[in-house]
Length: 333
Image (cartoon, rainbow, N blue to C red; front, side, top):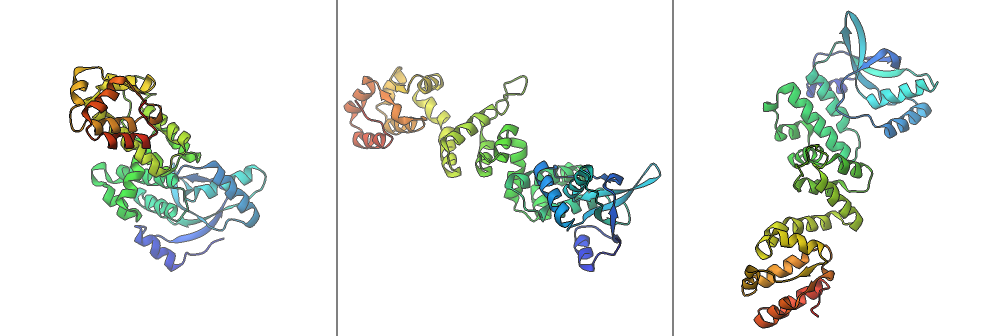
């Protein structure tokens, strides 16, 4: 099956940097081709679904390839459409013999041309946000290898891919800044992609010599968000509150006291001179309220008599303090 490509298709490829190439259509035994490095990982489930479709109605879209010479022997190399290649190979392995249809260039293509073809091919496919992120990141890595790290910017990549700089930046953060275990949660459909991106802002744990706990905080937080069934908006609110803990806990209690508060049944007490003096400050009630609101379950809070007396004695914004705490389910006994 041989024929020349349409002028429109040639024009599209020329605009992507593929020039002076004659394209033909060929049918090749899948065992007689080699594969170019691909910017997209092969996923088993989509490949199997594609195999069933091809077995029923045939290969509707050709792969794209070129001709390479290795040790004096020429081979057909599949550049794009590798899911189709693996689907047809699977059919052949299962006894359903088929040829693979390839739109083939008459010469070996450069790395830049291969990258442009793979980018164009994958931009046309419908993918989940996390799949899209991995494609963008792979293109980011490949571009740096081909053009030099110093020449590649997020703005350049965004222009080449027709995506916003934020989309590109988020994709890189997702792949490079997020725990693989959290990425598995996203792929498994238990954690939204947009929620997972929020976790890239958390501090990573780098105190483990083995590196196994590097993303431990992300994983623990992801499990918590899933258990609470938080929406992305709720997760964002929770994480902002969590990020403020360091700023609020230190001035009011100190780090060690805050850790104890989080683990001793949520009993808040005045234990040092600075806290005693702090009760007279105008911002004391506000800081106390924010501290309580940051607890996982504010309704469990119990105040010691010293706290109650401090509120009664000062009378400073007392009614508002009571009202705000009651909204959290906290009451003075």
